[in-house]
Image 1 (cartoon, rainbow, N blue to C red):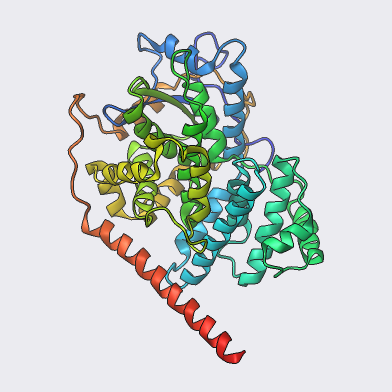
Image 2: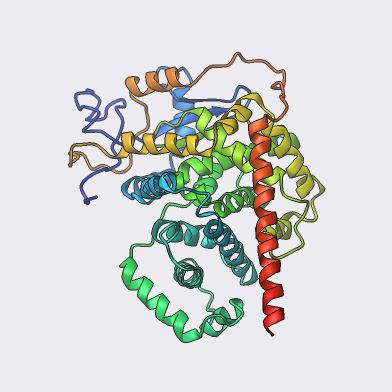
Length: 454
């Protein structure tokens, strides 16, 4: 995409020069809009300028004054996300791939991601390093026919580049060679790093779920209720890392994945801290239905609920993700991993979440793909307006479409009725366990063959 298309354009507000609504939707493809998520009714709606408390909500999310940079930085990330086609390209590839034939390579990918999270933890790197590496790896290498050894070497190359981008920690190539059990010579690692750097051509900055989560937490914090705290971030990163281990994680925009993680984290936190407000605000350039948000959150919760206790074997794909979480929260009884798993089991049993899981992940990925195509890619090659820090106020047409797409629930204080997990959900979990057993048996045979040869 060229530099002059898909710019973040202001919506019509007050005394804006674009308030006459004379521009067509094709000329204004991107609008940064405030959406409100209601935790009581599980509804997601844009804030309407006609509402009596619009000014209060708008000023709160825009952080007018010293903290306005938070709002502007969020819009910068949304613009970065909209201008890149990595998510759409990978979702198309993922949907076209026969996953049963690629099961072995995808399980190898899970092992690689777990290994990268372990390197990040050992060297006390920033939380987003592994997430950034996984997004680059999926955008360029996953499901593209690389041999296992080449795939691991390229993954290490991306990790080194991203670690240098985010940290000032100097880890020598000899140390990375030891992390791979000396499978790669330091010269090979140095060569692949230089090759990938030239291949990327400085273009390895991506919008990341963890960045959106932190910004949404900070934008929703007040003087009486601080949300951007270490334990909430640790819980959110646990959910993000669990999602990153799955091959479908890069099929979703970072802002959407961050919203689903935010819903999970704040629903869990509201059990511990009831003072957390039931209305929370997010920024999007797309219009995602609440079913898509809850379906993605439900898949993450289903995986966490199915984890076998606290993993103790490093071969377990979630070993280092849980280690990172326990490093921050092991001394807090309320944040015990078993409590998180119990909450996830209850969340999955919700009727709306259960229904979305039963439809399958391919349905959610297809829905996200259609939304991206409709929102970011238009037949017209140019956009005339280029202002990048919008005043927020959804257009009437946009608000009407969201209101029609989002089912309304009557407000009540009664908890949502829980339903037993459907047969489809149980089949997904059984298939995951069966695939793991098959891989363990295959690895045992390989070990026995190596012993016999020796």
